[in-house]
Amino acid sequence: LFCAFALARVAAAMRAEQMQKALGLFDLAKRKLKTDVPKTVEFLPELAVLSYIERNVGVCSALLGKWDEAVRLFRSSLDFLPTNATSHYLEGRYYQEQNRHFDAVQCMMTSIVLDPDFKLPYLGLGNSELLSRNFDGAMTACLACFKRHPDAPFAQFIAGQSIYHFLLDAASLGSSHAELLDKGAKALEMAKRRIPEYWTESDQIMLDFVYASASERSKLPDQDVHIWKLHGYRP
Image 1: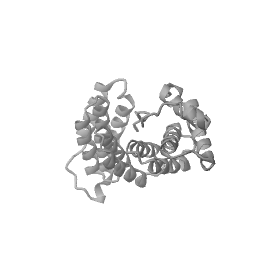
Image 2: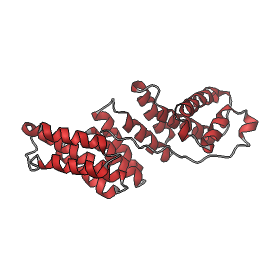
Image 3: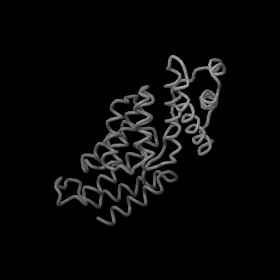
Image 4: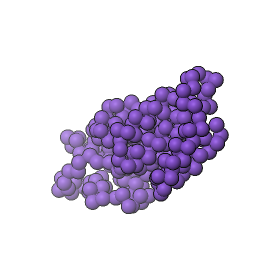
């Protein structure tokens, strides 16, 4: 059992640069285990390792753009171990690729409940809520993320953009929105400073908007909802 897990762990660490070798190690690891073990508490260690292998092979498929194959493996992982928070997150990523954001939200929330310290599902949840134009939901996801990951730049970007679109949709920007403008500016500035390689011209226009005077804001072109694509995967 330990040998199978160790092989799978090594494979997960090398998959980005040596995909075929990693897949070979995953296959070797799985062949060291019985896959028809009863799904009972007595076999929890075996089920956990099988779940780990399946979801990591699924990540390999996702990295190759084979999302239908990937989701089959993520669901196989959950069949072995329904409490695998990472596999719920990954199934949510599949739904995001299919623009099925309601389903993605359910998966991300399940992942958070199972592992509240896991950062990626908060970001996935925020992205899906943002793309659904549920800006309150996106902000709620970010605030929950900040409680455990205070300086998460992806969450700062989601929060800043949520504020931007909320204000853009507002009938007018009176003094009551001054605090929101300030929070939006701080969030977007932090995102820009922490991950400058993701920053785009569209992002800069949003930042200019929250800094601008009322007369200047009206001259800026409206920006569509967009996200910074997440590529993070647990080993």
